[in-house]
Length: 121
Image 1 (cartoon, helix red, strand yellow):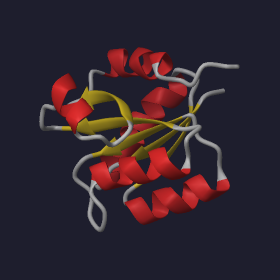
Image 2 (cartoon, one colour; image 1 turned 60 degrees about the horizontal axis):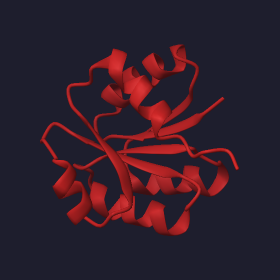
Image 3 (cartoon, one colour; image 1 turned 135 degrees about the vertical axis):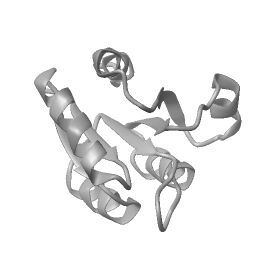
Image 4 (cartoon, one colour; image 1 turned 90 degrees about the vertical axis):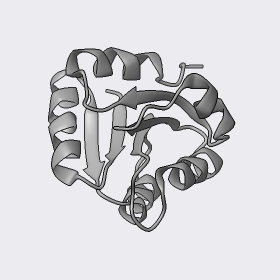
């Protein structure tokens, strides 16, 4: 079962997304800040880390860079209510493999995340 970690300052939004993804066969954990997310990553292997750009303490790009550097087995997907183009994503140099805009199109998020899962070797 693919493991997803959703980090969003709006924990209610993260939990709503987590419930939807769980119905699609993912094991999902939600956190509201970078510190809690890093603690979770230290203890649990995660396939995809979905990071909101607007976090407190450490912003989403900083957290994405941290995950890409320290947890190379995890793929990073950014999310935000603000649009981020493919060019901006590449220029951010944060290791993210994709972007999901808010509000979520729940029927599309699951398929997008499945396409970003690390390939079995």
